[in-house]
Image (cartoon, rainbow, N blue to C red; front, side, top):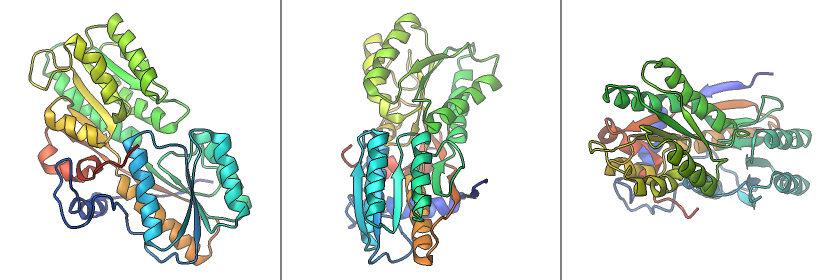
Length: 353
């Protein structure tokens, strides 16, 4: 059965981020008395006496680290007891952790699953126990089962970002060689980001040569090694899109010795974009090395998921089923001055990942 869909509109997303932007201390945001470490969002209700199981698969990127902290802080601020489990990227371990939570009689479950398939298995377990479940950012492989799913529109965010990169490429006045660093394609987020890249490539057949694909499997060392090999075989890459901002240090380590880590407007600049909206990407856009990045609205996703879960728990609803879509946007060199504070990576100090 198709999951009910809800989508954020710009104003609603802006309210959440603007409120946090006022609390920022780094990355260009303003400062205030509220500690940067507090990145909680409004849960929308009191969860006193309720226990929430929160399972995540790791915190290897700024996005995951910030998301985990925001969800945990928010639940604790709503007086919930939080039972946290890190499965360290082991889906079988995560399933056992959720089963243990179910045995303890938790009132709700939130999971950042390892992949779309394991998400379905965990949803099935929660549904069988009549415990409401929310999935954060990494969607299940299908709409089977009942769950609250907060997810970015990865395809459109990637498309917006690559459309800006294409506009920069047109200024070169010739066909250009694009390269994409692809994530783990068992993760639907990686699939949709790749789809958004190809939407733009295929819309501009006279502009782009056949793209070079570099597999990363969401692993920094793998991404760096495969990019180095690709650049050795194809030194004339003009445009590089990484499916996640967390790979920019590896990209720099490969391009810098080749004389290709160069700011916008200088000879040898590689047109470059990413996706996530992390603190590093914010800095690199300001410094001119990166042209654009797609922004997932971390705060909207956390707030919409927690509000929906809290409402279900307090209403005694055991199988809420809704898709909460974050439309996101692209932060570019052109709109940096106007939209910097809308990007989470520009307004918070990233928690340790």
